[in-house]
Length: 323
Image (cartoon, rainbow, N blue to C red; front, side):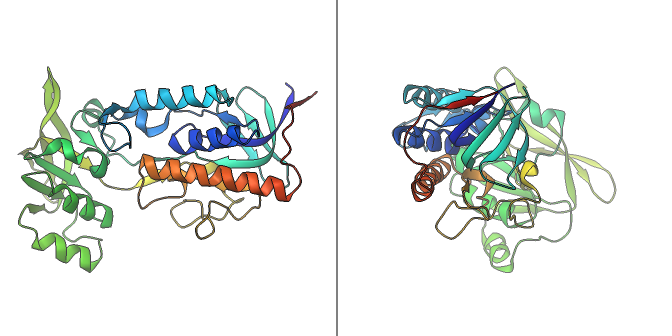
């Protein structure tokens, strides 16, 4: 396989990756984007998106198709492949794909995203996007005046439960222990909210629902002490037990926090290695929204362009192929 040189290589095809590639293409940098294992990212498993500016409502997969079409329109070279190895020890950086192709990149934009940590139940997978969600900010609106449950015990779970009270008639917070890990301020707000009811020492054993239409009707809960089963009628389940950033390829090369998120400079997407930038959920564990990911993708492309200009490499040129 030939080695392919490129000024800007984007890893990931979610909102951050596509936006970075679009901006880089408009700067005449001829970027290459590697789609990865899940082309389109997390939005491809989301149904209605009602918080994307300019669209009253759009299906997540349709939005990602449009982003891909726009990227191709401005000249982004989109590669349907996955990355198997990354060498950041020297610049230009070397990225090896599953096909055996190697890209030699002057700059690298990492937009590989993160995945919600799920409970691992078959029934959970069955109703994902149809009553089971990992994002209250994304999907809470669809549960107006309904009963929902949140699973988790940390700050994310408590914040999701509090946010859902803006829409739902009642919110259950299910935790497998008898105390929360969330900070005291969040706990005080939680316990003071009359819409929220705690269910302690319980785990979700299964999600129940209907086939026509596909939707959630309840949960089977397992008592953590006795093992006894009980049923809980709900219209939706929000899983808030954390996210896992897709950063394994960069372990030991880039500075990361304790949870594996890539650390960037303040007000920047620049990582610990000059010429490498990180955008989207791969470095954002606070907001995790499509619009913020896209904004960071823009930042990464602009910073990559400035880096190339500083290094004297910004002049547009044809991609070079070497045997």
